[in-house]
Length: 223
Image (cartoon, rainbow, N blue to C red; front, top):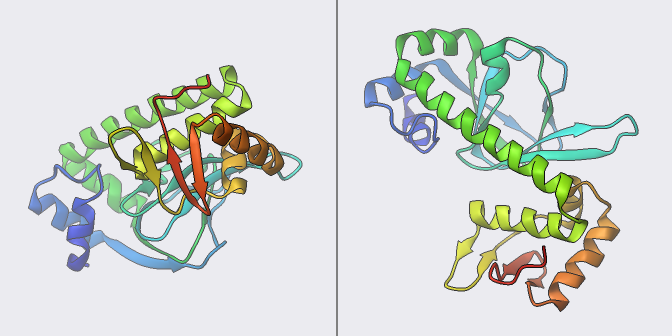
């Protein structure tokens, strides 16, 4: 699997590693392909692998007792997920589902823990990334608790724009942005509410839309 060494260098927990460490990781991974809608792992099951997205997109989500979905994160190319269960040896805390045909690099828990013992720099990188994700989770809890629905939707789109958009002087363009259902599942509201709130943002000059291309004007705030 040495041919995936370059892909590993694009993953933030591995990007500062030496070539020798990258080569060690590339020797213990394998690749699997998941079709659109396929469950990669389920909340409550034993966690025995770390996953890196080589191609495609994966959503990490939860379901309530009535089956309503809440999207915690969407992982794209070079992103990773599943690291918590590798470290604390507890069951999976969420579900991971392929949003489109996806090619995933997989590192099994026993191999990964052995690698951590041999390469402390990997452990440090993982701690940094996990701290960053914790801060992001705290921020999301804060805006879910204190912002109105319109504010939550705008905040979510700004986060998507910061992560995957193109920043111009006064605006941000998101190509192939999230669907209204994806936005609803990430902001804790219905698709109909998203439609109304996005129309309101357009009217206020904060957002413009053309199909799934969104243009945001961060200088104009509604919250």
